Amino acid sequence: MPKSTKTSHSKQVKPEPGLEKRTRRTYNAEYKMSIIAQADACKHGEVGALLRRERLYSNQLSAWRRELAQSGLAGLSKTVPGPKPSKTSEQRQIEQLEKANVRLTRELEIANGCLDLQKKALSMLDHLNSGSDV
Image (cartoon, rainbow, N blue to C red; front, side, top):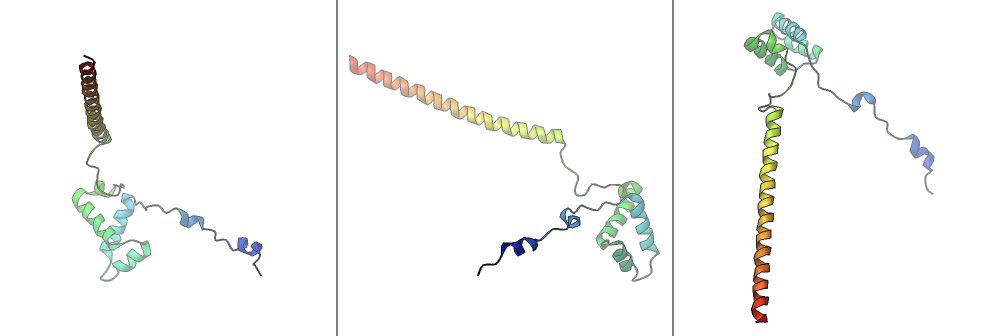
Protein backbone atom coordinates (compact mmCIF):
# COMPACT_ATOMS: atom_id res chain seq x y z
CA MET A 1 0.00 0.00 0.00
CA PRO A 2 1.50 3.42 -0.92
CA LYS A 3 2.37 5.93 1.74
CA SER A 4 0.25 9.00 2.07
CA THR A 5 1.71 12.22 0.71
CA LYS A 6 0.60 14.25 3.74
CA THR A 7 3.37 12.95 5.99
CA SER A 8 6.16 13.58 3.47
CA HIS A 9 5.42 17.31 3.34
CA SER A 10 5.64 17.71 7.10
CA LYS A 11 9.14 16.19 7.21
CA GLN A 12 10.79 18.77 4.96
CA VAL A 13 14.15 20.04 6.09
CA LYS A 14 14.18 23.74 6.77
CA PRO A 15 17.60 25.40 6.84
CA GLU A 16 18.52 27.66 9.70
CA PRO A 17 18.88 31.27 8.54
CA GLY A 18 21.96 31.80 10.70
CA LEU A 19 23.84 29.10 8.81
CA GLU A 20 22.84 30.25 5.34
CA LYS A 21 25.36 33.05 4.88
CA ARG A 22 28.67 33.07 6.65
CA THR A 23 30.80 36.18 6.48
CA ARG A 24 34.46 36.75 7.12
CA ARG A 25 35.17 38.16 10.55
CA THR A 26 36.95 41.49 10.69
CA TYR A 27 38.73 43.03 13.64
CA ASN A 28 39.54 46.66 14.29
CA ALA A 29 42.98 47.86 15.37
CA GLU A 30 41.92 48.51 18.99
CA TYR A 31 40.69 44.93 19.41
CA LYS A 32 43.89 43.55 17.91
CA MET A 33 46.00 45.71 20.24
CA SER A 34 44.02 44.56 23.29
CA ILE A 35 44.43 40.88 22.33
CA ILE A 36 48.17 41.37 21.80
CA ALA A 37 48.46 43.09 25.19
CA GLN A 38 46.45 40.34 26.91
CA ALA A 39 48.57 37.65 25.22
CA ASP A 40 51.77 39.38 26.32
CA ALA A 41 50.47 39.54 29.91
CA CYS A 42 49.62 35.81 29.94
CA LYS A 43 51.83 33.36 31.77
CA HIS A 44 53.11 30.16 30.21
CA GLY A 45 50.17 28.07 28.93
CA GLU A 46 47.47 30.73 29.31
CA VAL A 47 47.61 32.03 25.73
CA GLY A 48 45.70 29.01 24.44
CA ALA A 49 42.84 29.69 26.84
CA LEU A 50 42.75 33.33 25.72
CA LEU A 51 42.61 32.31 22.06
CA ARG A 52 39.86 29.76 22.69
CA ARG A 53 37.83 32.30 24.68
CA GLU A 54 38.13 34.87 21.88
CA ARG A 55 37.71 32.21 19.14
CA LEU A 56 40.99 33.11 17.48
CA TYR A 57 43.82 31.11 15.98
CA SER A 58 47.45 31.32 16.98
CA ASN A 59 48.46 32.28 13.45
CA GLN A 60 46.16 35.32 13.67
CA LEU A 61 47.93 36.43 16.83
CA SER A 62 51.38 35.94 15.30
CA ALA A 63 50.32 37.80 12.13
CA TRP A 64 48.99 40.70 14.23
CA ARG A 65 52.26 40.83 16.18
CA ARG A 66 54.24 40.83 12.94
CA GLU A 67 52.08 43.62 11.46
CA LEU A 68 52.50 45.67 14.64
CA ALA A 69 56.28 45.21 14.56
CA GLN A 70 56.56 46.10 10.86
CA SER A 71 54.10 48.98 10.46
CA GLY A 72 52.96 49.93 13.94
CA LEU A 73 49.30 50.71 14.59
CA ALA A 74 48.73 51.49 10.89
CA GLY A 75 49.62 47.88 10.04
CA LEU A 76 46.93 46.58 12.36
CA SER A 77 44.21 48.74 10.85
CA LYS A 78 44.21 47.02 7.49
CA THR A 79 41.05 45.01 6.95
CA VAL A 80 41.30 43.74 3.38
CA PRO A 81 42.28 40.04 3.41
CA GLY A 82 44.66 38.55 0.93
CA PRO A 83 47.49 39.98 -1.12
CA LYS A 84 47.33 43.43 -2.61
CA PRO A 85 46.37 43.47 -6.29
CA SER A 86 49.36 43.89 -8.58
CA LYS A 87 47.40 45.93 -11.13
CA THR A 88 44.89 48.73 -10.84
CA SER A 89 41.45 48.39 -12.39
CA GLU A 90 42.49 50.70 -15.24
CA GLN A 91 45.53 48.54 -15.97
CA ARG A 92 43.38 45.40 -16.03
CA GLN A 93 40.90 47.09 -18.37
CA ILE A 94 43.72 48.22 -20.69
CA GLU A 95 45.08 44.67 -20.74
CA GLN A 96 41.65 43.26 -21.63
CA LEU A 97 41.22 45.82 -24.41
CA GLU A 98 44.67 45.02 -25.82
CA LYS A 99 43.84 41.30 -25.88
CA ALA A 100 40.55 42.04 -27.64
CA ASN A 101 42.40 44.24 -30.12
CA VAL A 102 44.88 41.44 -30.92
CA ARG A 103 42.04 38.94 -31.34
CA LEU A 104 40.04 41.22 -33.63
CA THR A 105 43.13 42.06 -35.68
CA ARG A 106 43.76 38.34 -36.21
CA GLU A 107 40.12 37.79 -37.25
CA LEU A 108 40.42 40.70 -39.71
CA GLU A 109 43.57 39.19 -41.22
CA ILE A 110 41.77 35.86 -41.69
CA ALA A 111 38.76 37.57 -43.28
CA ASN A 112 41.00 39.57 -45.64
CA GLY A 113 42.87 36.38 -46.57
CA CYS A 114 39.58 34.68 -47.41
CA LEU A 115 38.52 37.64 -49.55
CA ASP A 116 41.86 37.59 -51.43
CA LEU A 117 41.47 33.86 -52.02
CA GLN A 118 37.92 34.37 -53.36
CA LYS A 119 39.14 37.13 -55.68
CA LYS A 120 41.90 34.89 -57.05
CA ALA A 121 39.49 31.99 -57.54
CA LEU A 122 37.02 34.28 -59.36
CA SER A 123 39.86 35.64 -61.52
CA MET A 124 40.95 32.09 -62.44
CA LEU A 125 37.38 31.09 -63.33
CA ASP A 126 36.96 34.21 -65.47
CA HIS A 127 40.26 33.43 -67.21
CA LEU A 128 39.22 29.81 -67.89
CA ASN A 129 35.78 30.87 -69.15
CA SER A 130 37.20 33.53 -71.43
CA GLY A 131 39.84 31.11 -72.78
CA SER A 132 37.27 28.42 -73.71
CA ASP A 133 34.99 30.87 -75.51
CA VAL A 134 37.70 31.81 -78.07
